[in-house]
Length: 383
Ligand code: SAH
Image 1 (cartoon, rainbow, N blue to C red):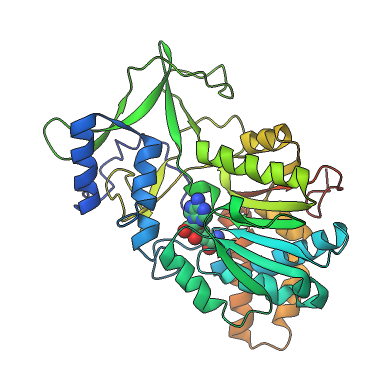
Image 2 (cartoon, rainbow, N blue to C red):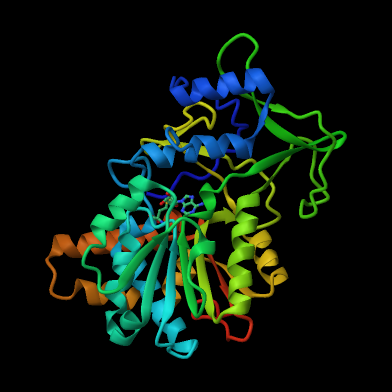
Protein backbone atom coordinates (compact mmCIF):
# COMPACT_ATOMS: atom_id res chain seq x y z
CA UNK A 1 0.00 0.00 0.00
CA UNK A 2 1.32 3.47 -0.73
CA UNK A 3 2.01 5.58 2.28
CA UNK A 4 -0.90 7.98 2.76
CA UNK A 5 -0.18 11.44 1.36
CA UNK A 6 1.01 14.03 3.83
CA UNK A 7 -1.63 15.67 5.90
CA UNK A 8 -2.01 19.41 5.51
CA UNK A 9 -2.76 19.91 9.19
CA UNK A 10 0.18 20.97 11.33
CA UNK A 11 1.53 17.79 12.92
CA UNK A 12 1.05 19.11 16.45
CA UNK A 13 -2.66 19.52 15.79
CA UNK A 14 -3.69 16.25 14.20
CA UNK A 15 -7.35 16.81 14.95
CA UNK A 16 -7.49 14.24 17.71
CA UNK A 17 -7.14 11.47 15.12
CA UNK A 18 -3.89 10.08 16.36
CA UNK A 19 -3.53 7.59 19.14
CA UNK A 20 -1.93 8.55 22.46
CA UNK A 21 1.86 8.87 22.62
CA UNK A 22 3.67 5.58 23.14
CA UNK A 23 5.86 5.44 26.23
CA UNK A 24 9.27 3.98 25.46
CA UNK A 25 12.87 4.20 26.67
CA UNK A 26 13.68 6.27 23.57
CA UNK A 27 10.85 8.75 24.29
CA UNK A 28 12.08 9.03 27.92
CA UNK A 29 15.63 9.62 26.75
CA UNK A 30 14.56 12.33 24.30
CA UNK A 31 12.51 14.07 27.00
CA UNK A 32 15.46 13.99 29.44
CA UNK A 33 17.88 15.21 26.76
CA UNK A 34 15.67 18.13 25.74
CA UNK A 35 14.99 19.09 29.38
CA UNK A 36 18.73 19.14 30.05
CA UNK A 37 20.06 20.76 26.88
CA UNK A 38 17.12 22.45 25.16
CA UNK A 39 15.10 21.78 22.01
CA UNK A 40 16.55 19.63 19.21
CA UNK A 41 16.13 19.98 15.45
CA UNK A 42 13.57 17.87 13.58
CA UNK A 43 16.54 16.18 11.86
CA UNK A 44 18.08 15.15 15.19
CA UNK A 45 14.70 13.87 16.35
CA UNK A 46 14.18 11.89 13.14
CA UNK A 47 17.70 10.49 13.30
CA UNK A 48 17.18 9.11 16.80
CA UNK A 49 13.62 7.95 16.18
CA UNK A 50 14.62 6.02 13.05
CA UNK A 51 18.26 5.06 13.51
CA UNK A 52 19.14 5.07 17.23
CA UNK A 53 21.55 2.11 17.61
CA UNK A 54 19.33 0.27 20.12
CA UNK A 55 15.84 1.71 19.95
CA UNK A 56 15.57 3.33 16.51
CA UNK A 57 12.66 2.26 14.34
CA UNK A 58 14.78 0.69 11.59
CA UNK A 59 17.15 -0.80 14.18
CA UNK A 60 14.56 -2.47 16.38
CA UNK A 61 11.37 -3.11 14.36
CA UNK A 62 10.30 -5.10 11.29
CA UNK A 63 8.85 -2.22 9.32
CA UNK A 64 7.96 -3.57 5.87
CA UNK A 65 5.24 -5.90 4.58
CA UNK A 66 1.69 -6.87 5.47
CA UNK A 67 2.69 -7.59 9.08
CA UNK A 68 4.90 -4.51 9.30
CA UNK A 69 3.86 -0.87 9.21
CA UNK A 70 3.97 -0.09 5.51
CA UNK A 71 4.31 -1.75 2.12
CA UNK A 72 6.39 -0.64 -0.84
CA UNK A 73 6.07 -1.13 -4.60
CA UNK A 74 8.50 -4.08 -4.86
CA UNK A 75 6.56 -5.79 -2.06
CA UNK A 76 3.28 -5.26 -3.93
CA UNK A 77 4.28 -6.59 -7.34
CA UNK A 78 7.30 -8.47 -8.67
CA UNK A 79 6.85 -6.54 -11.93
CA UNK A 80 8.26 -3.40 -10.28
CA UNK A 81 11.70 -4.92 -9.63
CA UNK A 82 11.65 -6.82 -12.91
CA UNK A 83 11.14 -3.65 -14.96
CA UNK A 84 13.90 -1.94 -13.01
CA UNK A 85 16.06 -4.97 -13.76
CA UNK A 86 15.48 -4.41 -17.48
CA UNK A 87 16.31 -0.69 -17.06
CA UNK A 88 19.59 -1.76 -15.48
CA UNK A 89 20.41 -4.25 -18.24
CA UNK A 90 19.74 -1.55 -20.84
CA UNK A 91 21.95 0.90 -18.92
CA UNK A 92 24.73 -1.68 -18.67
CA UNK A 93 24.58 -2.10 -22.47
CA UNK A 94 24.75 1.66 -22.89
CA UNK A 95 27.86 1.97 -20.73
CA UNK A 96 29.55 -0.52 -23.07
CA UNK A 97 28.78 -3.88 -21.43
CA UNK A 98 31.74 -3.75 -19.03
CA UNK A 99 33.05 -7.15 -17.84
CA UNK A 100 32.95 -5.90 -14.26
CA UNK A 101 30.67 -3.31 -12.75
CA UNK A 102 29.19 -2.50 -9.36
CA UNK A 103 25.44 -2.83 -8.94
CA UNK A 104 24.45 -0.85 -5.86
CA UNK A 105 21.10 -0.82 -4.11
CA UNK A 106 20.67 1.77 -1.37
CA UNK A 107 18.26 0.79 1.42
CA UNK A 108 17.16 -2.62 0.08
CA UNK A 109 14.48 -3.28 2.73
CA UNK A 110 13.73 -7.02 2.68
CA UNK A 111 15.78 -7.65 -0.46
CA UNK A 112 12.72 -8.29 -2.62
CA UNK A 113 13.56 -5.77 -5.33
CA UNK A 114 17.10 -7.09 -5.79
CA UNK A 115 15.72 -10.61 -6.08
CA UNK A 116 13.34 -9.48 -8.85
CA UNK A 117 16.07 -7.42 -10.56
CA UNK A 118 18.43 -10.40 -10.72
CA UNK A 119 15.68 -12.73 -12.00
CA UNK A 120 14.77 -10.33 -14.81
CA UNK A 121 18.42 -9.68 -15.63
CA UNK A 122 18.88 -13.36 -16.44
CA UNK A 123 17.91 -12.39 -20.01
CA UNK A 124 21.56 -11.25 -20.26
CA UNK A 125 23.73 -13.84 -18.50
CA UNK A 126 26.79 -11.66 -19.15
CA UNK A 127 25.19 -8.89 -17.04
CA UNK A 128 24.86 -11.27 -14.10
CA UNK A 129 28.44 -12.48 -14.53
CA UNK A 130 29.73 -8.91 -14.65
CA UNK A 131 27.68 -7.62 -11.72
CA UNK A 132 29.24 -7.22 -8.31
CA UNK A 133 26.21 -6.46 -6.16
CA UNK A 134 26.79 -4.19 -3.17
CA UNK A 135 23.86 -3.53 -0.85
CA UNK A 136 24.08 -0.44 1.33
CA UNK A 137 22.05 -1.06 4.48
CA UNK A 138 22.29 0.54 7.92
CA UNK A 139 19.88 -1.75 9.75
CA UNK A 140 21.32 -5.02 11.06
CA UNK A 141 17.86 -6.60 11.18
CA UNK A 142 17.04 -5.80 7.57
CA UNK A 143 20.53 -6.83 6.49
CA UNK A 144 19.82 -10.23 8.04
CA UNK A 145 16.52 -10.51 6.11
CA UNK A 146 18.31 -9.54 2.90
CA UNK A 147 20.96 -12.19 3.51
CA UNK A 148 18.31 -14.88 4.00
CA UNK A 149 16.31 -13.87 0.94
CA UNK A 150 19.27 -13.50 -1.39
CA UNK A 151 21.03 -16.72 -0.42
CA UNK A 152 21.80 -18.53 -3.65
CA UNK A 153 21.31 -15.40 -5.78
CA UNK A 154 22.81 -15.64 -9.27
CA UNK A 155 25.41 -12.91 -8.59
CA UNK A 156 27.98 -12.14 -5.91
CA UNK A 157 26.58 -9.97 -3.10
CA UNK A 158 28.31 -7.91 -0.42
CA UNK A 159 26.96 -5.52 2.21
CA UNK A 160 28.26 -2.00 2.90
CA UNK A 161 27.53 0.57 5.59
CA UNK A 162 27.58 3.59 3.33
CA UNK A 163 27.59 4.52 -0.34
CA UNK A 164 31.14 5.80 -0.06
CA UNK A 165 32.35 2.28 0.72
CA UNK A 166 31.11 0.87 -2.60
CA UNK A 167 33.64 -0.06 -5.27
CA UNK A 168 35.00 2.41 -7.80
CA UNK A 169 34.65 1.69 -11.53
CA UNK A 170 31.56 1.37 -13.75
CA UNK A 171 28.50 1.56 -11.54
CA UNK A 172 24.69 1.29 -11.64
CA UNK A 173 22.70 2.41 -8.62
CA UNK A 174 19.06 1.98 -7.56
CA UNK A 175 17.16 3.28 -4.53
CA UNK A 176 13.46 2.89 -3.83
CA UNK A 177 11.97 4.72 -0.84
CA UNK A 178 15.33 5.51 0.69
CA UNK A 179 15.51 9.31 0.42
CA UNK A 180 12.13 9.74 2.17
CA UNK A 181 13.53 8.39 5.44
CA UNK A 182 16.65 10.55 5.50
CA UNK A 183 16.33 13.15 8.29
CA UNK A 184 15.00 16.60 7.39
CA UNK A 185 15.20 20.02 9.01
CA UNK A 186 12.06 22.15 8.87
CA UNK A 187 11.83 25.95 8.61
CA UNK A 188 8.72 28.00 9.20
CA UNK A 189 8.15 31.41 7.55
CA UNK A 190 7.53 34.06 10.21
CA UNK A 191 7.14 37.85 10.14
CA UNK A 192 10.91 38.01 10.55
CA UNK A 193 11.79 35.42 7.90
CA UNK A 194 12.52 31.70 8.14
CA UNK A 195 12.90 30.18 11.61
CA UNK A 196 13.80 26.58 12.37
CA UNK A 197 11.13 24.29 13.77
CA UNK A 198 12.42 22.43 16.82
CA UNK A 199 11.24 19.59 19.05
CA UNK A 200 10.65 20.54 22.68
CA UNK A 201 8.90 19.08 25.75
CA UNK A 202 5.61 20.50 27.03
CA UNK A 203 5.85 22.46 30.31
CA UNK A 204 3.16 20.47 32.08
CA UNK A 205 3.68 16.93 30.73
CA UNK A 206 6.21 14.57 29.20
CA UNK A 207 4.79 15.15 25.74
CA UNK A 208 7.06 16.11 22.84
CA UNK A 209 5.85 19.21 20.99
CA UNK A 210 7.01 21.45 18.16
CA UNK A 211 8.34 24.96 18.80
CA UNK A 212 10.03 27.57 16.66
CA UNK A 213 13.63 28.54 17.34
CA UNK A 214 14.52 32.09 18.27
CA UNK A 215 17.77 31.73 16.39
CA UNK A 216 18.23 34.17 13.50
CA UNK A 217 16.95 32.98 10.12
CA UNK A 218 19.26 30.70 8.22
CA UNK A 219 20.25 31.45 4.69
CA UNK A 220 18.00 29.02 2.81
CA UNK A 221 19.29 29.42 -0.71
CA UNK A 222 16.71 27.13 -2.34
CA UNK A 223 13.60 28.26 -0.46
CA UNK A 224 10.95 30.00 -2.57
CA UNK A 225 11.12 33.74 -1.89
CA UNK A 226 7.35 34.17 -1.92
CA UNK A 227 6.45 31.98 1.05
CA UNK A 228 3.57 33.22 3.22
CA UNK A 229 3.83 33.31 7.02
CA UNK A 230 3.28 29.84 8.46
CA UNK A 231 4.54 28.01 5.38
CA UNK A 232 7.12 25.31 5.90
CA UNK A 233 10.26 24.54 3.91
CA UNK A 234 12.18 21.32 4.44
CA UNK A 235 15.74 20.38 3.65
CA UNK A 236 17.55 17.10 4.07
CA UNK A 237 21.25 17.58 4.63
CA UNK A 238 21.71 13.81 4.54
CA UNK A 239 19.82 13.68 1.21
CA UNK A 240 21.95 16.51 -0.19
CA UNK A 241 25.15 14.76 0.85
CA UNK A 242 24.04 11.43 -0.64
CA UNK A 243 22.98 12.86 -4.02
CA UNK A 244 26.25 14.79 -4.18
CA UNK A 245 28.28 11.65 -3.48
CA UNK A 246 26.32 9.67 -6.08
CA UNK A 247 26.65 12.44 -8.66
CA UNK A 248 30.36 13.00 -8.05
CA UNK A 249 30.88 9.26 -8.55
CA UNK A 250 28.91 9.28 -11.80
CA UNK A 251 30.89 12.27 -13.01
CA UNK A 252 34.07 10.23 -12.41
CA UNK A 253 32.93 6.70 -13.29
CA UNK A 254 30.63 5.64 -16.08
CA UNK A 255 27.17 4.76 -14.86
CA UNK A 256 23.69 5.72 -13.82
CA UNK A 257 21.38 5.92 -10.82
CA UNK A 258 17.62 5.44 -10.65
CA UNK A 259 16.00 7.01 -7.60
CA UNK A 260 12.31 6.43 -6.88
CA UNK A 261 10.37 7.98 -4.04
CA UNK A 262 7.39 10.11 -3.28
CA UNK A 263 7.85 13.81 -3.18
CA UNK A 264 7.20 17.36 -4.16
CA UNK A 265 6.40 18.39 -7.69
CA UNK A 266 6.70 22.15 -7.46
CA UNK A 267 8.53 24.57 -5.22
CA UNK A 268 8.78 22.14 -2.34
CA UNK A 269 6.78 24.11 0.22
CA UNK A 270 4.67 22.28 2.78
CA UNK A 271 4.96 20.35 6.01
CA UNK A 272 5.31 16.75 4.86
CA UNK A 273 6.64 15.11 8.00
CA UNK A 274 4.50 12.05 8.66
CA UNK A 275 4.54 8.93 10.78
CA UNK A 276 3.06 5.56 9.84
CA UNK A 277 2.45 2.69 12.22
CA UNK A 278 0.34 -0.38 11.56
CA UNK A 279 -0.55 0.99 8.10
CA UNK A 280 -2.18 4.06 9.72
CA UNK A 281 -1.16 7.62 10.38
CA UNK A 282 0.39 8.75 13.66
CA UNK A 283 1.56 12.12 14.88
CA UNK A 284 5.30 12.29 14.17
CA UNK A 285 6.27 13.02 17.80
CA UNK A 286 4.06 10.37 19.42
CA UNK A 287 5.90 7.14 18.76
CA UNK A 288 9.67 7.64 18.40
CA UNK A 289 11.18 4.25 17.54
CA UNK A 290 7.76 2.69 16.98
CA UNK A 291 6.61 4.35 13.76
CA UNK A 292 8.14 5.03 10.38
CA UNK A 293 8.79 8.75 9.98
CA UNK A 294 9.23 10.14 6.49
CA UNK A 295 9.07 13.35 4.49
CA UNK A 296 8.49 14.16 0.84
CA UNK A 297 11.60 14.21 -1.32
CA UNK A 298 12.41 17.52 -3.00
CA UNK A 299 13.30 16.26 -6.48
CA UNK A 300 14.05 19.71 -7.88
CA UNK A 301 16.69 20.18 -5.24
CA UNK A 302 18.19 16.72 -5.91
CA UNK A 303 18.33 17.35 -9.65
CA UNK A 304 20.03 20.73 -9.13
CA UNK A 305 22.57 19.24 -6.75
CA UNK A 306 23.31 16.44 -9.24
CA UNK A 307 24.11 18.96 -11.97
CA UNK A 308 26.19 21.04 -9.57
CA UNK A 309 28.24 17.95 -8.74
CA UNK A 310 29.03 17.34 -12.42
CA UNK A 311 26.48 14.67 -13.39
CA UNK A 312 23.47 14.84 -15.71
CA UNK A 313 20.01 14.41 -14.20
CA UNK A 314 16.59 13.61 -15.68
CA UNK A 315 13.04 13.82 -14.40
CA UNK A 316 11.18 13.64 -12.20
CA UNK A 317 8.74 11.46 -14.13
CA UNK A 318 5.80 9.79 -12.45
CA UNK A 319 6.15 6.14 -11.48
CA UNK A 320 3.17 5.50 -13.70
CA UNK A 321 4.87 6.98 -16.79
CA UNK A 322 8.17 5.28 -16.02
CA UNK A 323 6.62 1.81 -15.65
CA UNK A 324 4.57 2.31 -18.81
CA UNK A 325 7.65 3.25 -20.80
CA UNK A 326 9.57 0.29 -19.41
CA UNK A 327 6.90 -2.07 -20.77
CA UNK A 328 4.47 -2.70 -17.91
CA UNK A 329 1.62 -3.86 -20.17
CA UNK A 330 3.77 -6.43 -21.97
CA UNK A 331 5.24 -7.70 -18.70
CA UNK A 332 1.75 -8.17 -17.23
CA UNK A 333 0.68 -10.10 -20.32
CA UNK A 334 3.75 -12.37 -20.21
CA UNK A 335 3.34 -13.04 -16.52
CA UNK A 336 -0.34 -13.94 -16.95
CA UNK A 337 0.33 -16.49 -19.68
CA UNK A 338 -0.74 -19.96 -18.55
CA UNK A 339 -1.88 -18.77 -15.10
CA UNK A 340 -5.19 -19.49 -13.34
CA UNK A 341 -7.85 -16.78 -13.12
CA UNK A 342 -7.17 -15.97 -9.43
CA UNK A 343 -3.45 -15.65 -10.23
CA UNK A 344 -4.22 -13.41 -13.20
CA UNK A 345 -6.44 -11.24 -11.02
CA UNK A 346 -3.65 -10.89 -8.48
CA UNK A 347 -1.10 -9.89 -11.13
CA UNK A 348 -3.49 -7.24 -12.47
CA UNK A 349 -4.27 -5.94 -8.98
CA UNK A 350 -0.55 -5.61 -8.22
CA UNK A 351 0.15 -3.79 -11.49
CA UNK A 352 -2.78 -1.48 -10.82
CA UNK A 353 -1.51 -0.59 -7.36
CA UNK A 354 2.00 0.30 -8.45
CA UNK A 355 1.01 2.18 -11.63
CA UNK A 356 -2.50 3.63 -11.43
CA UNK A 357 -2.67 7.38 -10.91
CA UNK A 358 -5.14 6.89 -8.06
CA UNK A 359 -2.75 4.48 -6.30
CA UNK A 360 1.06 4.81 -6.27
CA UNK A 361 1.46 5.96 -9.88
CA UNK A 362 1.40 9.73 -9.49
CA UNK A 363 2.48 10.17 -5.88
CA UNK A 364 5.72 8.35 -6.57
CA UNK A 365 8.28 9.77 -8.99
CA UNK A 366 11.63 8.86 -10.40
CA UNK A 367 14.76 10.74 -11.30
CA UNK A 368 17.78 9.39 -13.10
CA UNK A 369 21.31 10.64 -12.49
CA UNK A 370 23.85 9.81 -15.13
CA UNK A 371 27.42 10.23 -16.29
CA UNK A 372 27.18 13.38 -18.40
CA UNK A 373 28.45 11.77 -21.62
CA UNK A 374 25.61 9.21 -21.81
CA UNK A 375 22.33 9.74 -23.66
CA UNK A 376 19.05 10.07 -21.76
CA UNK A 377 18.11 6.74 -20.14
CA UNK A 378 15.07 4.74 -21.20
CA UNK A 379 11.99 6.06 -19.43
CA UNK A 380 13.42 9.59 -19.34
CA UNK A 381 13.96 10.02 -23.08
CA UNK A 382 10.44 11.21 -23.87
CA UNK A 383 9.73 14.95 -23.65
N1 SAH B 1 13.81 -0.18 -0.78
C1 SAH B 1 13.00 -0.99 0.10
C2 SAH B 1 12.93 -0.49 1.55
C3 SAH B 1 12.49 0.91 1.79
S1 SAH B 1 12.54 1.31 3.52
C4 SAH B 1 11.61 -1.18 -0.49
O1 SAH B 1 11.28 -0.49 -1.43
O2 SAH B 1 10.88 -2.04 0.00
C5 SAH B 1 14.09 2.16 3.69
C6 SAH B 1 15.30 1.27 3.67
O3 SAH B 1 16.47 2.10 3.73
C7 SAH B 1 15.45 0.32 4.84
O4 SAH B 1 16.08 -0.85 4.36
C8 SAH B 1 16.38 1.09 5.79
O5 SAH B 1 16.98 0.30 6.75
C9 SAH B 1 17.34 1.68 4.81
N2 SAH B 1 18.10 2.86 5.19
C10 SAH B 1 17.68 3.94 5.87
N3 SAH B 1 18.64 4.88 5.95
C11 SAH B 1 19.69 4.41 5.26
C12 SAH B 1 20.99 4.91 4.96
N4 SAH B 1 21.38 6.11 5.37
N5 SAH B 1 21.80 4.15 4.20
C13 SAH B 1 21.40 2.92 3.77
N6 SAH B 1 20.20 2.39 4.04
C14 SAH B 1 19.36 3.12 4.78
